[in-house]
Image (cartoon, rainbow, N blue to C red; front, side):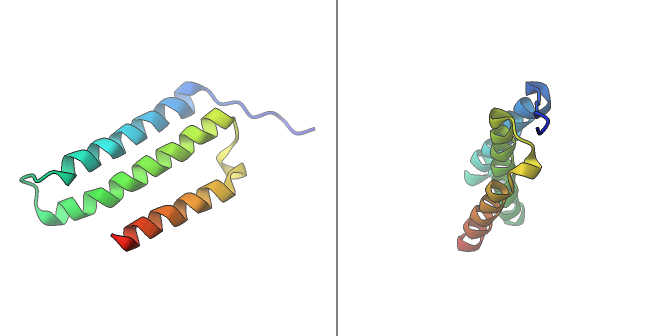
Length: 89
């Protein structure tokens, strides 16, 4: 019998929601024309994308109550998604 995995909302759920909100917030703020230099705008969008996708993986891990080590295929597919979106940009 394998031991059950249990994670609390404070350890996985809340940080995941904060990461997703931060990623979406950064992408919205820096997608609009702003006074920030173009170099920073081009750097922040990939960071926002990685934060949002990483937060969604963490939230999925919390909802399914599975450790991240057991979600190798989901993490690999998220990595491929982020890489494809960054390369096509």
